[in-house]
Image: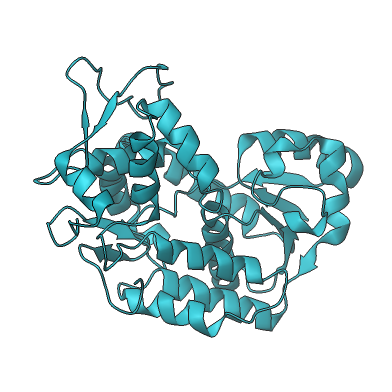
Amino acid sequence: MIHIVNGDCTAMQLTKVAEQLWNEQVWVYSELLTEGPVYARLEQYLAYRALQLERMCGLPSTVFLQRGNEQERTWKSDILPAQEIALWFEHDLFDITMLLRLVDRLTQENAHAKLYWIDIASIAEHDRYLGFGALTGEQLAPYRDAAIRLSAEHIEWMRSAWIAYTSPNPLKIAQWVQESSSIPTPFCAITEALQFHLSRYPSTQDGIGIVERSTLGAVQDGAVTFQKCFEIVRNQLPQYGLGDMQFWGYLRRMTCGDAPLLGLSPSSSSLPEPLKAPLADAGHLLLTKSGQQVLDGTLNWAQAGGYGRWLGGAFITRSTAGIRA
């Protein structure tokens, strides 16, 4: 069996156990699928995604392509020959999108492999959002015996989720979530993650999504630096799996355009650069007139032309009826 994990911390702890107890390999999968554009056959669009992620999140395209090409190489050598594959992914949107992507791709490229989901909630005392990376090797070891073998029905359902998530038509994912509302535990975690994804879409009322709204609220309450604001929003929205690079992308959009929601104080340094540790006082944020109007309910940011971003496979510039009120 080969174990696919997200994150070097999990890999480091699990590798010790896998090699010593089971004589098995751990493989790290890294892909930013909460930020778009996201396509069903993702590997065919690495170059275009690299350019878009550089614009959205500040991730240098050269770094993305180098990592992506290396991952593709080891995928072919390490994953495609495997007969049993365990997928260690948590319940936040960041992890669930990777789980869905892997199940879809493995089904097409390694159809004979037995697939297992290692569900973090199968051991009740561990937080389903905090992650495997917070656990020791001894705490991780029992999860192998709790692995969920994915049946043909599970796989088909998960693949339908991936197709809906990557569709350019945002109504597809809204329909999928509605049709999957009664899915039992543990697979309801997938429905919940994609339900959260819908909350990222701009509301018909104020033209922003849940991350922008939480950010404006945090700044209004006095969280004026990038680091403090990020910590508050990340803790408020554990369903996201939000990283500082993703949050930088949100702030970049919120501080730009014809109707920016936030600005930087005249004495402030700029927003921290992605992939670099932020200074504690970097990016001193202020509410703009537009930001206050959105909070007051007198401005719809999407209608004012402020919203424009990829969400899954759809490029969204305005509120869409049938997705969010």
